[in-house]
Image 1 (cartoon, helix red, strand yellow):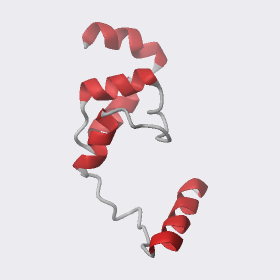
Image 2: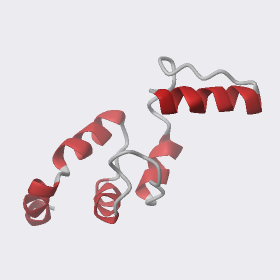
Image 3: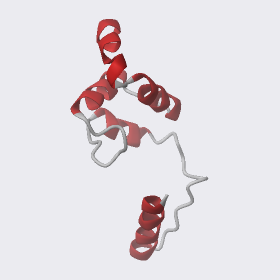
Length: 85
């Protein structure tokens, strides 16, 4: 949470906009598109080439899709994923 709080303070200082995590939309299509394109640097658990490719193949459209991807894509499961994609 300290990283998020630091980010929130920087955004407030630079833009005057105060971010409320509890009211942020989770259905931003552009945010999901950025993930599909592999622009995942700094996104926890989505930075590796393997997971980026998997995200691109799955094309998540909801926060629930993202939750499933993080749950399913694990090193021990990757062999099963490749067989079932």
